[in-house]
Image (tube, rainbow, N blue to C red):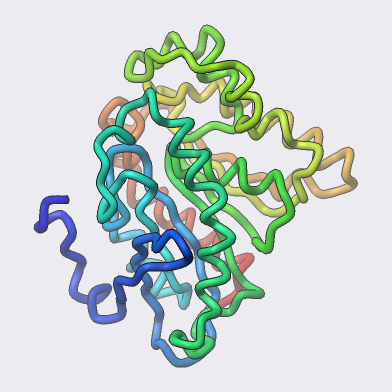
Length: 273
């Protein structure tokens, strides 16, 4: 990681700690409003090829709202760099490695060294692109999360990797083993998804993760919520026709500020800092 890109805004750096969490020693950036009173926390995962320090303005907003941050480096990224994991061919390997780490991260936040600073009854999870895929697959199994927020991702991996929509994503010209895709595909594991509030942000012109795949996932999830007797209005999609972001995928371009504000408002609504 280039050092200047790892620098944090002063207001965030003053309240941040860099730690290693769990048995695999996951590199994490923790930030807390005061490191004294228990605060709700959001576990956040970045996308492929970047690192946890990216887009630190997100964490600044959370702190101002009273929400703590636990931002992690995905396998092969940031402080545990292995450039092989940056290849689209290794995305499923990344998911396989990251999904089981989440429970260890939650457990680690209860460690005595943090003196109860994280309220584990108010934990959110979220991520962008590959980090969002990890999030959505983890939510298909029993979990402690109050709500979730994802950006530029999809819960329809078969649609992304095995259908025509995949061909539209020129940056991911990779065919994966269908049986492995099925095991990691949130769409194929919705029966065990516990309905919780979910914010979905996406550019409709996304050239990496076509919105059509996520639209199908959201519609399937709505059906699941109805079958479970849950309010499908807990699923909150927000899209833009185009944003001006690189490949319409990273950061939401001229709507980046709006996206961060929407996300912060959503988290505040359910984490109640």
